[in-house]
Length: 124
Image (cartoon, rainbow, N blue to C red):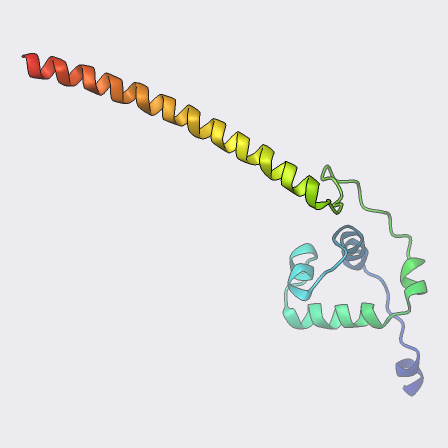
């Protein structure tokens, strides 16, 4: 049996292929993520399978006919220059101020209505 341990081979299960597709999309997978993404019910089983997949030669895994993950609607991250960061923050701040001004206008109208109601109550 020493020959089996010297040249270990694993049979890729459908859950392994699913995990590899998710790995293509997520780039990094830990055991807790693997348990969520695939139907591993126990941490021990997830650890053993991740270890076996990690020790398998890459060429064997890459030849497993893994379909690429579908494109997500999320835009890929790109590094922004400091100027772009400042300009983006300026836009966010302007939007926040506009929202606050709108809320303030609404509250001023409410205050005016309460003042009118107070005059009516005092005159009675």
